Structures are given as C-alpha cells and as structure tokens.
Image 1 (cartoon, rainbow, N blue to C red):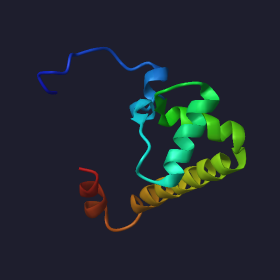
Image 2 (image 1 turned 180 degrees about the horizontal axis):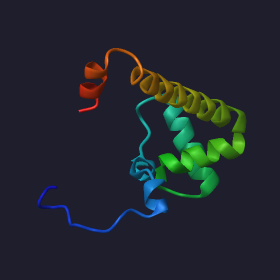
Image 3 (image 1 turned 135 degrees about the vertical axis):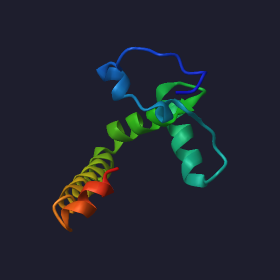
Image 4 (image 1 turned 120 degrees about the vertical axis):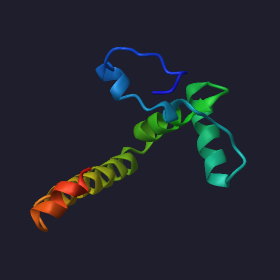
Length: 102
C-alpha cells in the first residue's frame, strides 16, 4: 500500500460497480463521430461538460440495439475467458498447475 493510500474498510457494492473512467469529461476534436456524439449528448442532456457515462446513457436510450450487442459481446468474451482460465487449471501435470497461480 502506498503512503498516499488511507486504510479503510471494504468497498460498498456501489463502489465496486462504479467505474471512475465513466466520469471523465470528453472533448470533441479527435474525430467527426466523437464530436457528433459529444455534441448530441450535450444538447440532449443540456450539459456543457459531457462524460462518457452521459454518452452511453444517451446511446442506450436512443440506440438500445447497439448498446445491447456491445454488452452481450463483452459478456460472452469475458465468460469464455473465465472458462478458458478454469479449464487451464485442469490440464498439465499437478506441479505446473500449482505453480501457475503463484
């Protein structure tokens, strides 16, 4: 633990499920599509500073099929990765399997 980190109790469920990257403000200028999304979400939500979370909420409301497909693909890839990791624990000889997790 670093000297800047204060010891504290366990995280709450909300803290575990909150991604700090969602609150990062976004700026236009990197691409035409990004500028369109930032401006559209800002106008729709009547906000000057638009975060990634605001854009996702706007997309989920306006284009739920897109967000659903992205979420489903992310879930399936994560599930497959978890299964692959679990099956790796059952292969090889016991000495290799025991030392891989360390």
